Length: 105
Ligand SMILES: [Zn+2]
Image (cartoon, rainbow, N blue to C red; front, side):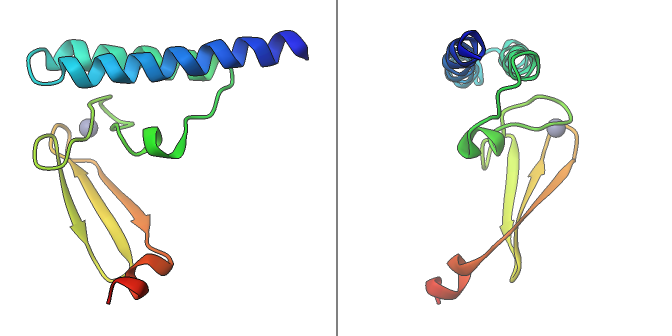
């Protein structure tokens, strides 16, 4: 148990670092950026680490591209959901909006 917790801690740190690198490389080396995302996902799977919410929405699960609004993704807000589309592979993600929309109006 202890060893596992320790491994997961290291894995989480690596994932954060890899996403950081992916962001830095995104403009100049999109392919490299994807590779970092891919690596981060592999580490997550192997060590059974769940991605933090903010990272989960940051990449395309289909092509591993970072999803940057206006650059690699388009974002629309409908009445019920946040709709994010990957411009690399056209995959669409829907994130249901909860109370946020109501308070915005
Ligand atoms: Zn994609």
